[in-house]
Length: 461
Image (tube, rainbow, N blue to C red; front, side, top):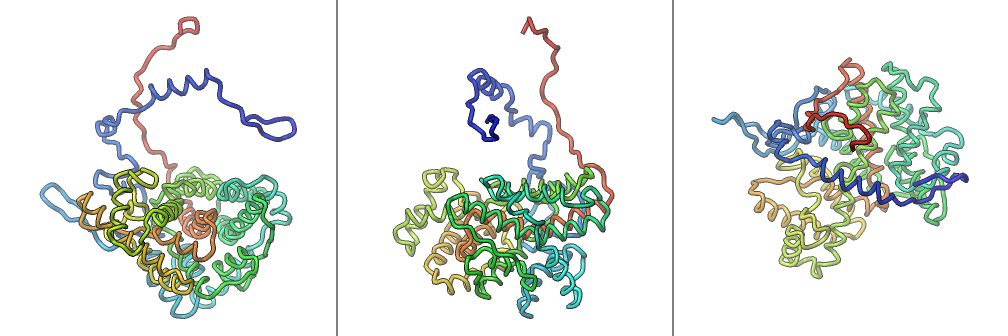
């Protein structure tokens, strides 16, 4: 890629000489897999049994996903139903408690994650009012920042927006907790606006009509998201409540998930809030983290296309076997959405979400597709457990979340940005915790396995 005088860019092929160096790199730089075992490297910061290596302490969120049972060899893990706690409160109770009282739950969850306690009515009203006051971008920000460069990926556009907001802040580098709290609240309020505006700019770049709706201060995050997304600004209560539950369930997932750990690492360097959150966004964009539900949707589209009779268990079993044998779909041998890096028997987020999936499918007349999802889930888990010799396997929330987003009319381009709209609450809480803990710069050790050698003069190379 080279830059021309007029500011446009042009694609420039890599020269044959440089390409040859790439081939040389492949021969010299691939590390022997056996060395990881020899040096006892915890790849992915995980122990041999899959448990994460303990790298820190947190009060923000906790995942319980297995039981540790002592035996003659030391100990081993056994499957257990998963539980996700926000500040010690079961996230399922948080969702049920808000729904019972007719409230939207995301703002309550964000308050709990940030301040460590459930808000009373007055505190929640004040908190929502504070978010509403911040839910606007600087004058001409949409035109000068979001529209200025054609958006090719919404996550990158949002990252650029976050980094540009640094320039509008009077105290951008102040890492005092009061200032960081203010920055985090502003970003929590701005994130849905950045996501929707980035999407509208992307649509316009695809030749679609451009329409921009401003957020309304009396509406919740979920309601504003749907209102700003849709041309007619309309939505049903079930749609808004389902999206709200999705935001709650994605608001945090413990300190060890990839984007939150990235946030901890970058925050430990003492850098500013905008850089730390942008780094977390970069991690979330990866298909191994935030983009998983898009892979489920691609897989299900392929299944719908290749299975003629969705109600036939034999047809479903036959095609899923082909997928596992790397003969169908993307030839990866994976059934996306089944199994989880942490949960063993069940993902509590999926269990909460399941009720809303059924309600929304009934409202949208999508029961036949929901039945197909249920068949793929049941048969796929059975096949995977047999092949892996496991007695339990969890269904990831990503298995159903893409289907829900599709029923809500959300384009796939917004799936991962919506994840960021929710996770900013957890990132904010963890950033403040890392700063207040006064911890050290996070710097793990890497063992260099390259042999030493002498410098060779140019004429002798």
